[in-house]
Image 1 (spheres, rainbow, N blue to C red):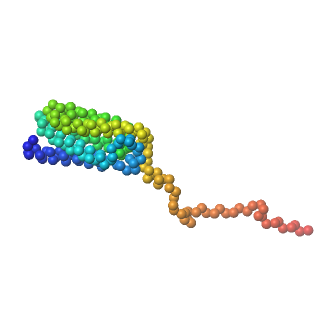
Image 2: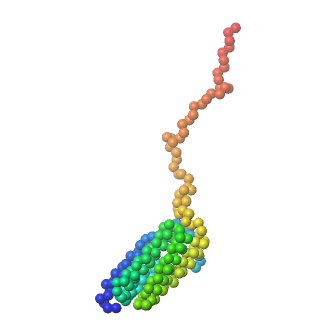
Image 3: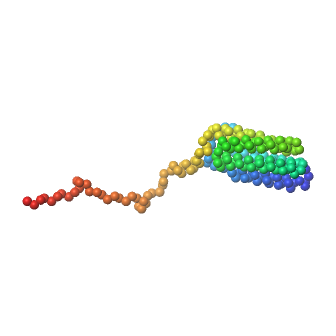
Length: 205
């Protein structure tokens, strides 16, 4: 590659991290996520940012290398379609998992994400073998993420129906406002009983 191709590399990196940013904006590590039971082998949350940053950087270099190694518009068009499908599936998984809280459907979607990576590597195997190898860490990580998704779903079968713990606490707290005089029920008028009636006057003799 020559310096003339560097602008396309910068563009590939910008697009790759724009996709990463979109997926990151959908990744909510709030109360619902904190309530989830996680498997013991799950990496720390801080590691995910490093791993994904590395993967998106490798994807950018893979796309850049493959673009310049492609022969003709048809091959480049297929390359763009495969990378676009992969990016959409990557972002959609974050939406299903972190926003819709559907761990089972996220696992189903992850299968299609895995297949999109495999399709990219298969497409690149002939004319851009180095680009295909650059996607191998992506494929391995998504495989590991699938196992993590499965284990988390198994530990939390009803997670989609949960409310955030903060919302539950608010719902369970008794009201703290004191009733005002205007909110108090009006006293009902007392009905005299038979024992409270005045004595009848004596009849004249």
